[in-house]
Length: 98
Image (cartoon, rainbow, N blue to C red; front, top):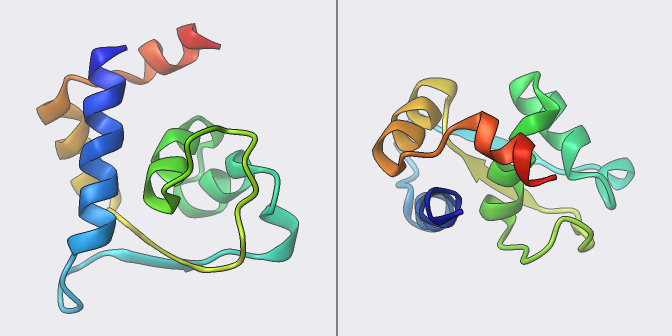
């Protein structure tokens, strides 16, 4: 749980401070994603289990919060892997929490 919290904070900070010139994923959310963070994760990363990344980038506290239409600044797959390694976050931990 601590690793997930560190991961969330790091993704949130990344989303808020990534320079315009940095290689990031800029994703504009769509109306059909309003109540489904896993759909955004599927479209961006090809994996619905990355919903915590989406939640953190959007600054949402809960999975069931409304995701308004906006631009999300997300790490690339490589950068995401580095953040996970640095924070000790493992996807299996995320799946066990459910």
